[in-house]
Amino acid sequence: MSDEAYRLTSPDGSEMELPVRKGTLGPDVIDVARLYREQRVFTYDPGFVSTGSCESDITYIDGEQGILMYRGYPVEQLAEHSSFIEVSYLLLHGELPTGAQLEAFDNTIRMHTMLNEGMLSFFKGFRYDAHPMAMLSAVVGSMSAYYHDEMDASNPEHRDIFSHRILAKLPTIAAAAYKLNIGQPFIYPRNDLNFTENLLHMLFAVPAEPYEIDPVAAEALDLLFILHADHEQNCSTSTVRMAGSSGANPYSAIAAGISALWGPAHGGANEAVLNMLEEIGDVSQIGKFVEKAKDKNDPFRLMGFGHRVYKNFDPRATIIREMCYRVLQKLDRKDTPLFDLAQELEQVALKDEYFIEKNLYPNVDFYSGIIYKALGIPTSMFTVMFALGRAVGWTAHWREMISDSKTKIARPRQLYTGPAGRDYVLVDKR
Ligand code: ACO
Image (spheres, rainbow, N blue to C red):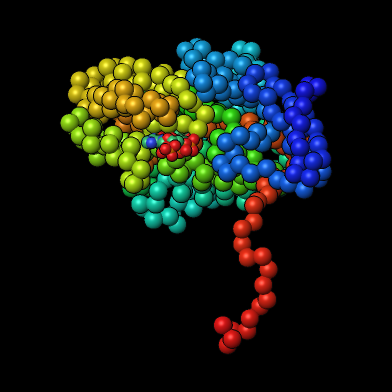
């Protein structure tokens, strides 16, 4: 807390000091918690563009400089040297693990990958063509029915078990949804495989023949999971915190986060980017689509472009573009029309006055779909892949929220614009 304060003068001339709080990095915040009690006014901020909802020491973003750090470590360093499992430990526990801690954590996650057989039978109730995000949200929500009695949020051991189950079982649920979509039998997890290898095995193995895991695919997915692992108070994370703030079962809170992620303005953008690139089809059509994106009367937007926080390059997009190039080379894809198209579209947009003026740059999702597609992952599974990476971030935020003595049930107020009060009229008199 600092001694600085904003002075607020109300229309009746009374004054109030609003304390300014300083974090370790980033803009200060004005603490308005006493505002309503003392002045009888609310703040108004649709979309929370100027509102900090909590204190957090997990992730820091500087949108002007294009900086992203988990627990103080730059994402570029983690992408180069770490693994998704190590980053998960870091997010959940605040520090990088020692060798022994990492081995124990990795082992625990491997040992929690199986689903209760009863949970598998849920998949029989879904239509074969159900969207995998719908199935993921529904089945994760159903974990609250399986583990309700073992989930006392005030018990640190229960919180750990919850975290391990979310991290370990989500890939199994995601793969089961995919197998249902393509009419193949469910493939059980293998505990001898690491997190990403196991996911590839459950997605692509079939009982009829051996399946060899491609190390390039495993490396690329692991990197994508690191880059998606957390992003401070984004829409889905705030949803998890909000649902969890009522004391709801945390599995249900994670299911709510999955639903929020699905939207095309958030995690659904990776699916939308691929659909958009396929619709553009050819570099000769880029100009037409860029004009559409700039047209105020046309709802079309360049998917994978723009971000609420980044007003400069999204550092994740830069790493993913490089990875995209390496994956396509290593997989020996000489013919890379979608990647070529995406790169050309990026160049055209970056030189365009509209995109320059509005600070619209490619975001994390602009290139990720091209990698998923090259790995054989279908478009409908792209947002599911995002969820598998982000689940650990949601879990870390839920843990932080539940342990914070300042947490209250999230309950925003409003500016009421409805009728100012009227009398009920009997139906035959209307
Ligand atoms: N294409 C064309 N114009 C755009 C785009 C875009 N992709 N993104 C923003 N704009 C324009 C808006 O029309 C608006 O113009 P105006 O000021 O003339 O009205 C201005 O830029 C600001 O846009 P807002 O929607 O107000 O910005 P906001 O911060 O609310 O939205 C968002 C950010 C949702 C990401 C937006 O840029 C967007 O819709 N992008 C496309 C979808 C996408 O890629 N989403 C993924 C985000 S990253 C993630 O969640 C993983």
